[in-house]
Length: 265
Image 1: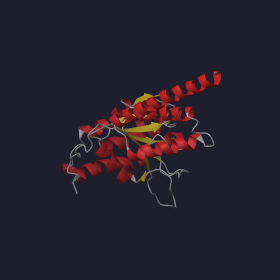
Image 2 (image 1 turned 90 degrees about the vertical axis):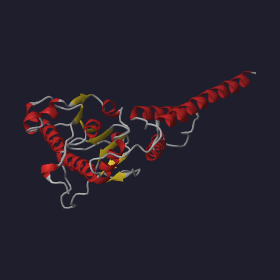
Image 3 (image 1 turned 180 degrees about the vertical axis):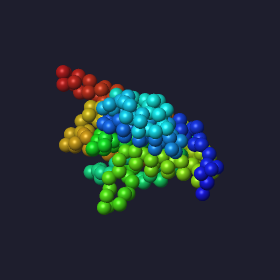
Image 4 (image 1 turned 135 degrees about the vertical axis):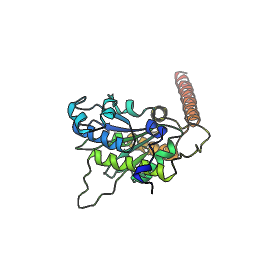
């Protein structure tokens, strides 16, 4: 194990490409505590989605010597603004879901993030202090992160959870000798914006084809989302799928016009 006296600073690529996202934090003190947890482990990218109260002196006070992380925090109005350019999104959740999702602990989540860094941006999502992330927000994540706390007291605040994740990121990097893995795919991964655009396009085509007849659209698309998240899509694959969907739209439209012409005759 590396001694504290000779432990190196975190690689710049990790600090620049892994962001911690707090969704609608209500207590500015928790923002400061989260910033402190991040800086302890060398992370610095903090994004706040629609915070109730920020900027705020309490956030700066609670951050101790991590005021620079608080002051540099990026504030955005929506979750999409926080993650659209990311290729991997991991959401922290203590709740089970009706449709099971790929579930990882903090160590596995950190390993996935470190593997992603050479190829893209990574976001870890942490939800509201009182209710966590919503189902819709969790559906935007490829992986769900669960920290298996003691069943006698399972409650973890956001800063605690963030500290565990940040530690595992740093420790995973140290265990690898301070090296990052080489990219193992021939094309860049598609970012969240591209995948969400493809999924919206797919939903529109399925609706046009009346595929949803006798089916629940929300459940169909949730499972399609899980399928594409589980397999991963690169930029070329998304473009191929968008082209396929556009072709289906065009052919379905031509067939529809043909049927209307025959009815007119």
